Each structure stands twice: as structure tokens, then as C-alpha cells.
Image 1 (cartoon, rainbow, N blue to C red):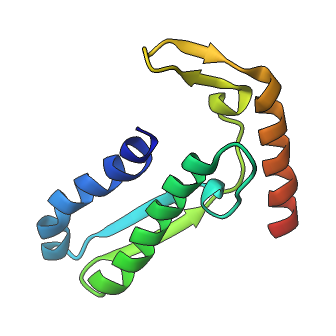
Image 2 (image 1 turned 180 degrees about the horizontal axis):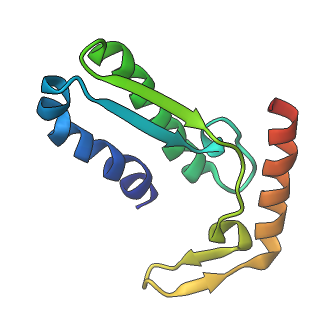
Length: 116
């Protein structure tokens, strides 16, 4: 499910827009997640999906140039709702696990300060 949202829902529209983008010499801007570079404990699936997204756009940049330009940017660490331990369970009900959430977010902040 994470892969569907974080990866496919970004890549599929680009696939269908490709003929138009090529014809217009269009450009794509990708706002990448710090999770694509940083891998704190407890978010392995999320980090993998974000790394896959960054990887495909970096590869597409080489494949589609000069007809389509692709810019990727990692804008830094933010504190989304999931960093507070909110998630949807299998039934689609919002759950909160605050014990593990703060540790994950703090790990990500520490790692981002090291790399950036």
C-alpha cells in the first residue's frame, strides 16, 4: 500500500503525460522526501518507497533529456502527521502509537543534521 501511494501514484500520471511533455519540451519537478536518503529505524517500507521514487526520476532524467527536463529537490525534514504516530490500520481506522513516533522523528532529525 505504501508503494502504491508513494511510488505509483507519482509515476503513473507522468507515464500518461509523456507524449504531451515530449511534444511541448515540458519539465517535471519532483519534491523528494528526506526519507529517500535517510533511513531511521521503523520506517523501512516508507524509506524504500521514497528511494524508489527518487531513483526512477533520476533515471528518467537521463533517458528523457533533452525532450523533458526533470528536477528533483529534497527540501529537508518536516514533521508530518505520521511522525506523530498516526497511521491507518487495515480497516482504515486512524490509530496512534506515540511511543515509537517520537523516536523515529528524532532519529530522522539527528540524521538530517549529520548529512545536511
